[in-house]
Amino acid sequence: MQESDNQVIKRPLSIDIDLGQRSYPIVIGSGLLTNASTFAGLPRASQAMIVSNATVAPLYANRLKASLQGLYNRVHLVVLPDGEAHKDWHTLNQIFDALLAQACDRKTVLYALGGGVVGDVTGFAAASYMRGIPFVQIPTTLLAQVDSSVGGKTAINHPMGKNMIGAFYQPLRVVCDLDTLQTLPERELSAGLAEVIKYGPIADVALLDWLERNVDALRGRRVAALAHAVRRSCEIKAAVVGQDEREAGLRAVLNFGHTFGHAIEAGMGYGAWLHGEAVGCGLVMAATLSNRLGLVDDAFVLRLRTLVERAGLPVMAPVLDAGDNAGRYLELMRLDKKAEAGEIKFVVIESPGRAGVRGAPDALVREVIDACCLRQ
Figure (tube, rainbow, N blue to C red):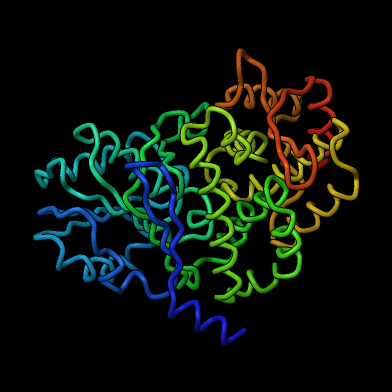
């Protein structure tokens, strides 16, 4: 595999998100952060601002700043607190405060350097400041590289629901430097694998087969394996987003596992479980629901559960309410963005490699929750 690793480092890949005049590339490779040519062709401006967090900034902010120095007269840095618990109004305002303090104009370019929280909050700030300024996504976690940085979803959380306040706003470019994954904590790496795994059941059974063979290589941070996982995930998401940018229909299938997962996050308090941990468990719950609806067999559920577990992710959901646990899940899931007139919509696997969105009777959903939750 060493030869493949060297090829990945020497030849970055580029995948286009086809959105007409708002199209942009996803660049995947090694050493991109420290190569000024990575950022060639971006709009000229007098100022740029890097938005990062307290964990990522000490590792990579100076490297990025050095690469950007020749493009701008001044490059500023804003360091946010780390974690899902800080994906809120207060953190968003820290970015606005910095932009205003530096008299940044509508040509100022924001660079989101970090994981999904940094990318989502920075993107929302870019969509809002002066009614829209350009921004670039530089995801440094596996989860952000394969999912949250791609497709233009930006948001902050509300105590009653995840990503409930935000905007669709596309970046100018997404730069996935695989080298940043080498400093990712083990738990964060596993969390990212949840978003890779979801693409198999909804769109590509061959990817599911590949993941079963290569999950250990991914957890071992083999560059060739990581490059393939990031590339294939981005290809699938790019194809879906190109057809349905604003989630009017098809794009909703990308939320496989997320209706259950978001309920876990909200019910436990943001940050108790990582987003990918909640989604990993949500994948098993959604597959179980698909099974109870008669869409997939027991073997498929076991196959997915085994892969999620091998990825280092939880497969049993937490109890959110000792009195009426299923009722608490249902209450939280009715706040999901896909819910319509109080009816919860679930992404289900209609057959391996093909997903759909549909409702399910509360009684059946209760059975799934009871079957998938930890016993007290």
